Length: 418
Picture (cartoon, rainbow, N blue to C red):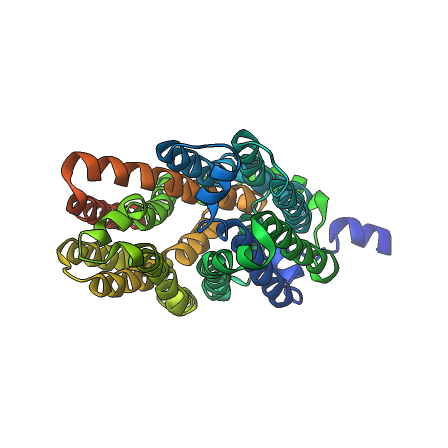
């Protein structure tokens, strides 16, 4: 039998193509480092306006105190609303065209928009540009998609925990920077400085981030997913539970934000120290999360993401309750730090499970929906907290939020068995 006939009867087996994570196994650690730096700088730039946002709104022609408060809240929330709307779209495009282009797009877009905020002439322009920053930006969201897709499954929880630590550090440092820079370079100059920081992150992303992405893989993976056996298809119960839990993480953390200054004022803090003490208490939850995010992410790699999610939800719900009974501001600060330590294990574990719940061709889209859910919680949380505080009293915010977290733990327990 000649060689041609043998090849027809016994075709040579072609090696299976390597998955996206396997092809990028030599790049993911360096990419993680760049993404941590980029997430830190972008979130510093976005959050540094908190201390002086009302002052900037007043400079733009808003006079009454109530209007200043209203427009400040709208301008601050506009970015998160924009990110919540477009995160799934960018995640889907990341699946189709690669993760690195989405990082570059986010960094360049945010650098330009942040600089433009420094030259606005009306509060409407400020709100519009903050919204655009969310729509075209989302570097932290794009980083989650890249790291969540590239890191080996056995280390995905740890890697996402490290990334979360960088983002939390940005949210913590941002207000501190915003309290100092305007005195040196003015409010408008502070926005230019923020744009410059993001531009540095953009350059590092362009020249240091490496990605082995083949657009043809997207087509072949989608075709393969359509012919997959029913047992390998997406479990939508699990996906829905993960999205609800992701939303609850930010909702729980942000529910008290609108009233925390008023609440601390009721604890006997003098008016001239109120703003500083309130800022310190707000920062405690982020500080607590920074201390444990990577450790709890690594724990999820060892004992499973669902176990960490259920445990952290129950613990966070229980820690919420004592916050309603504090008599001193430092007690509230300590409990908020403890709450941040338990919250920190949720997002890395959720992202790890979300990555494993869908086909590789849909990883970016799934993680995009996850980011959308998180930012939705960041928008909804202050609204719900403010309404509960007005209708039922300030203490009720802690009881309601704690109960929601425990109920969410029950949902996670049920979803784990699905």
